[in-house]
Amino acid sequence: MTTYKQTIGKLGEALAVAYLQNNGYRIITTNWRCQWGEIDIIAHDGHETVFIEVKTHRASATESAFENITPAKMQKFIRSAYVYADTNHIEVWRIDAIGILLNPDSSHTLEHVTNAFTE
Image (cartoon, rainbow, N blue to C red):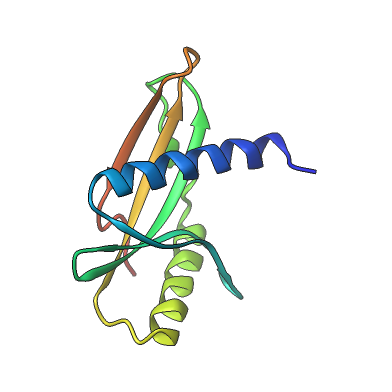
């Protein structure tokens, strides 16, 4: 059974994938998992592999979707990115974050932050 939170998360990830593709990114995979956690989207942006954390909230435009990316979540995400990069022999990569606010009027606001966090 899918929870409400999972449904909102999947909607946000679908919006993020569409946004990335419209901006020239090539999607490699979604929802990649390892012992440290999950990477929502892995994509290519030119010569660079990009690991993307997507946070989606139903909220007004004044609230930030990025509020739930805690330092502990960042560290797990960074470890996961290293595992993927090492396993796939990737040397050039970065971590981005996409925040999506689902507005009450059924519209959405998307914010894309490149190089969102590092060690």
